[in-house]
Image 1 (spheres, rainbow, N blue to C red):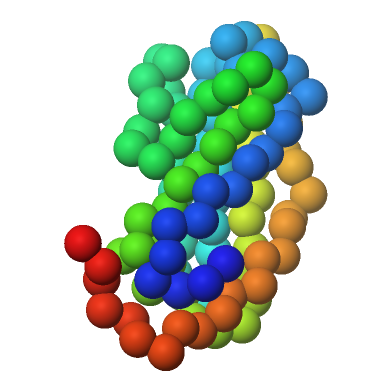
Image 2 (image 1 turned 180 degrees about the vertical axis):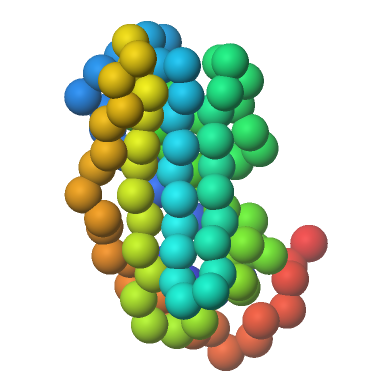
Length: 103
């Protein structure tokens, strides 16, 4: 992902999201952590669901929280009382020349 952009990351779940009590997508790089969490079927800003896909769209401000290099992302769900987790996914973070927020 490029800093100061609005990327959308899509994660395909092995279960129907409608059957999930919670869906959590966590981004981490060093001391920076960004969490998107659906609870009680209420989606947080930036998270949407389409069939078995969970889409996370980051804001320009959120991508600026990360430095050039590697960030990690992981999806966790609670479905039928069972907690499941994805592998940790490495995401490349790239710089932009101008970090001004475009509006």
